[in-house]
Image (cartoon, rainbow, N blue to C red; front, side):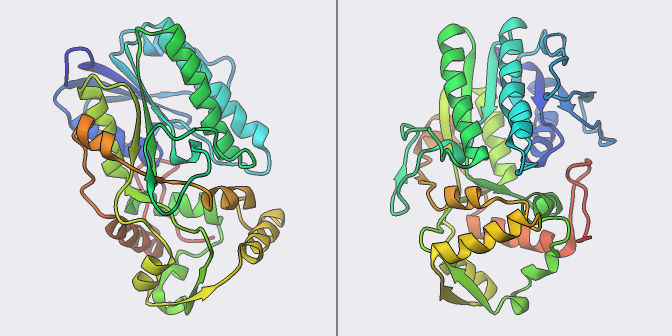
Length: 342
């Protein structure tokens, strides 16, 4: 780790899917003196060189500056996906909380800020070829997740203009999965009562083939390695992160040995909207609309400037995640707890 970022690293959202992987990698890095994990609920998990502080970024009374003082870097990962029916709540945590983090980084004179943006920040784009980091980041305005990620891109534009002494890195990963995140992600996107056993091939006689449903995936640990490399180098700016191949119904059909049935977007969206309106499905139809419009990302910059390459293919990532989904796997923190449906 370079002298500019060696030392103490603060990680917000340290107990979630990405946070647990980032904390583990940093705690094992000899160039990191210590890790301070910030989370709403302090875990019993005790990786080396790591201390925990209970912080709710949605609170206007939270005092972040003392927690950031003396830090070599802040890695900002905290994010709330729910409640999707009340976007004002997620806005308080995701947007206003993030702005408080940015302001505290400047006030505490932290030299490096690494921010978790997303493919969801990108404006609608092509599915036939990949785009680089210069693609517009205006999101899909109807989806709260994309709207919030895009808004923070603009907030960081202003932050970088006003605080050029802070090295700002923006990570824009694809959909992130690992076996330990299976239970958490089932609850977030499918609901508490969706059984993970539905991921068995014999229970899926067909897969809906929806036009435009082509996305990218990445193992969470591979994304965490990109964060670690960003601290080791002097890079700035945005980085796309994704594994090959792109995930579509053809790939999923091979994995599940299921036949594809072509369905119009409107039919699938209507089903998602009905389940969401009845509070049966946490994932909103607005997010479904956004997923169909997300561009595929070119990750050349991460390879050339970070020296980053994912160790697992997207197919391997999904197979691992589905195994975790079927067995109710989880991690060592409250958000990541393993549990079967119900």
